[in-house]
Each structure stands twice: as C-alpha cells, then as structure tokens.
Image 1 (cartoon, rainbow, N blue to C red):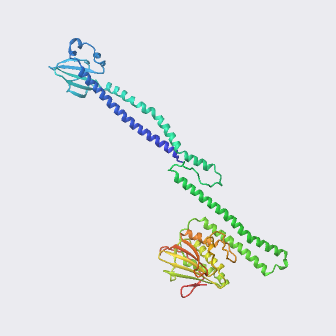
Image 2 (image 1 turned 90 degrees about the vertical axis):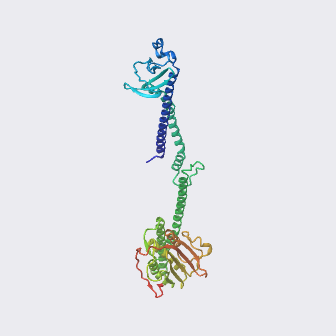
Image 3 (image 1 turned 30 degrees about the vertical axis):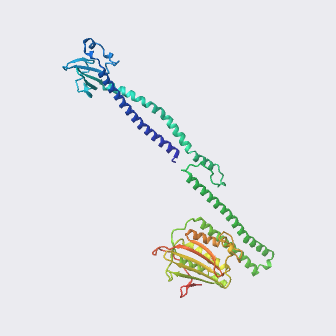
Length: 467
C-alpha cells in the first residue's frame, strides 16, 4: 500500500536536500571566488606597498616576514631595476620568470603560481603565490559559509515532518471517526471548517454515499416490513380457510370453499412473484447490454394475457404507429426480459382494474430515434390525490377493487428508469380510464440483432393485433 504521508515526506526531504545542495554549491562557489579575489587584492597590495629600499643589500638579507607578516612559503617577491637586473628575490627556489604587468597564472617546476606584476618608474615588481597554498586557504574560508546551512538542515527536516503530520491530521481524524462508528450509524461526517479544501470533495462524496446508503437501508427495512405485512394477509386468510375446512369435513367438497382457497393461494403466489421481480430489478442497477424487438415483446405479452382479458370480456389489442406501420421489427436498446416484465405489469394492471366489457389498448409510437409505449384503458382511473403515490411500493389507490399487490407500477417505473426512459401516468381527458406512457426507449441501429420471441397472437388486416 502506498502511503501519502511517506510519499510527501520522502518527496519533500529529497527536494529540500537537492535544493540545499544546489544552494550550498552556489554559496561555496561564490565564497571561493570572493576568497580568490581577496588573495589577488593581497598580492596587489604587497606589490604597491613594497618600499624603495627593498633592493639594499642590508634589506635583501632580511627575512621576508617583515613585509606585512607574510610567510615565505606564501608569497614570493621579485624586484628588477631599470636595467632589468634582478635586485631582490625573497624565494630563490621559486625561479619565477619575469612576466608582463598584471595578473597571470603560470606553472614552474610542476607547481602552479598566481603572479602579479607592477611596473614602476625605476623598477618592476613581481609578486607570486603558490596556487596550492592559495586554494587551501580559499577552501577553508569558503567552507565556513556552509556550516550554517548544514546546521539548519536537521531543523528543516523536523519542520517538514511537523507540517506533513499537521496537514494530514484531518484524514486521521476522519479515519478514527469512521472506525469508531457502529454499523448502524450512517450519519454524514461533521467536520465543520476542519476539512481542507483538497479533501473536501472526498468528504462530500463520502457523505453523499452515506446518505444514499442510509436511504437505501431505510427503504429496504420498509420494503421488508411491507412485504411481511402483505404476505401475512393472504397467508392468514388461507390458514383460516383451512381451519374452516377442518371443522367442516363434510363440506370439504364445497366448491365455494375450494375457490376461496385457490384465490388465496394465487394471491400469495402472485405477490411472491412480484417481490422476486422487484428484487431482481433492484439488484441490477444498469440495464443488460443487448437489443430487444419491442414489437415482438408487446405482441407476446398481449398473447399471454389474452385469456385473462377474455375471461373479463375486455377488448385487448396492440397498435403500431409511425415508421413501423408494417410488420418490420422495432428494435430498441435494452434487456428483453426486463422490457417484457414492464409491459406485462402495465397490461396486467390495466386488465385487473378495467371493468368487464372494457377496452385496453397497447400502442407503439415509433420515430427515427426512439419509441414510445402507451397502455390505455377505460377503467375508473386514479384519483388525482393518489397519482403521485401509486408508484410507491405496496400503495394502492383508494378506488381500486379486486386483488393486487401494489407493486406492478413500481416495477414498471423501475424498468423504465433503467432504460433511461420517462415514465408518466395520467387520467384520460374524457374522464374514462388511465393512460401510462413510457417515452424515450432508444432505437437500436437498423442492422442490430434482437432476441426473437414466439407469439401466438394474430394480426388483423389494419395492423392491429387482436386476442
């Protein structure tokens, strides 16, 4: 695992060390140059301040230490008269040749010298200094400038450690806060103004995740409670019917009693199927990759529910309008199974709540880019006050009759959302029935394959599929 703290510390210390080294090198070179300039100034000063009597025999025999305390191994002094005769030489072993006036660097006997020549009216003065002595002294003087930089380096490292620790302190606090929480605590992280700007998006995203997770868990708890309540009702009624049958064994063959038992069992089976379908749709956050022929899906659903419609005397049909007026497939991007579940729930709902002798129409309106699916009935509709709540799970409108689970519209809306389609329902303008629309089912390319579904429905000459 890569540690941000370690990366920061190593990076900052390496950068600080590199910059300190560059700064130290620059300081050292500058100090060395200044030291060399100082020694050049010393040579020039010796030459200028040399007295006229230095060429006398008595002075010539004296040690060169009389000249500003300079050691013989440091400075070699030579004096020539006007006739170019060497009249004084402080270091005979140096054997320095006479050079031109000014500063020059020469090599004599594998030894390097820095030489300064000065032309005066009656003499020529030449002062030389070994480079080894000169460089050693200059190096010592320049090295003294590095000690403060080296001494402050440990303090800089300590400050880097302190600053990094302080900068990462909010992350440590957040980690400890999350680690100390129980699994039931999903409240957002409250850091007030202690969150740095750089990690504020991370904290906001984490808080948003916690809020959504809390809502999801709450919805799951409500769903489980509602499912248990909805299952308990038909199962309790079934149990009571069985108890009645046990008490009246002679009436066990009663057709009315058997019919009630069958209705209760069918209601429980339907509710369990709806719960399993909703659980599957909730588990799949995204639609499966693939394409589906929405015409074949709708035709198959109309065929499958035709028995239920005929039993109630309801006219159930399928219309296609737009570009797909012929028998050509209408291929949309989506999951064939989920779309079939959506259409089945919408048509099943319409048949259940439409009065006998009514009409349920399934329409496909096709354009160049998308498809709109409509399920229209002439039933009682939904009271305006309940229109916004009928998509809630297990909620049933106040004017509904018959048996139902209250999950059909919720499942259809979930499938539509997964396919990025708009789900809407409204009462018909003539006050007779409900109209449910699924708008924006995206069409697949013309050459895209679709899952084929068998169909038992037959088609009338006008293109309307009838059961």
